[in-house]
Length: 465
Image 1: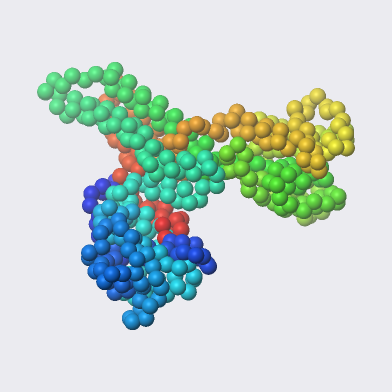
Image 2: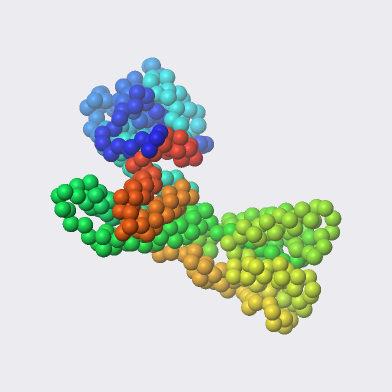
């Protein structure tokens, strides 16, 4: 692959420079942490750290914690604990030290400045994890999972990221890779050495390729679940003005995020609130009321935004006033939501004021009272069931969670399908297609990568990781 590099799983490369960064949140805290990684780690410690008991840095055992003082010349800066991990048994496979100091910003800044002055540079976003990947300690899937754990918005998302970090998805892809390698090797041997009469079982090879196709398709099917656990479900609350959309977003999120008044059309822009439903992170979008004819330019702009949100929604909650008979405006919204019926839940609000019969062509609603809190738990259960029936929930933790992973696997699956289709007629071309499929798999794990792709991935990490 032009411009591609192969991922090494050997010894650490020992980059010429040493990097450092505060790895605890900035601000006043009881404890602060600063990480150093690289070949100059112990030399820097020798210049700024006095271990208790007159120990020397070279005498400190790997993976031990040492008490002492950080100093600037003869002046004590802070009492600290230093956790030293010697190469290759560290996060980056380089010499790594983590300095635990008091958590005041002034102290952390002073210690960090001393580290920089004595032979280190400030780490770029994600650079510690990038070195762990480039030094072969983890593959690219595991590296991406580190960011996934940090940014997880729900317990299940954290569990999926932890499973990826533990290699669960990598192992599944390795099994798929072995099927493809075996098939390509058997085909190549028979094609390249016809004089050796190597037995060629096309039926067996086709069986392996078919299994690889099934496994790829199954993993790809799980991407939607992985994406939703990672990014969250988009739930749009729609309806005509003054039916209680803002009250519902407050009830579902147990907050007073949205402004609620008796004046119709209060909401003119999209309001967003984060919640968790059935273990899945969700974003609730409170939208401007839908009318057949908007009153003014601003209201029209709000309705345009509402329609855009409806088009992009995973689930729509259509809120109507259950205490009144459905009018032409309600029926017009039903018609608007017709193309989205499968992802729409109807919620009849204001049942504390009564409940009127619905026209037959309105789908089965959940009845609620945002004012009294009635039916809200039932609506949450309906939402959870809707997620299950929509195949958003998967019990498997070996899920693709990024568009990059899904794109590569989709390309891989396309090559496998084509290879299987022409196997009997053009076996040599099949080999070429299988090798292209393998190249796509290797992009997912990072066995082969482009420098700019790696830089893009790790640029999204936080400083200190």
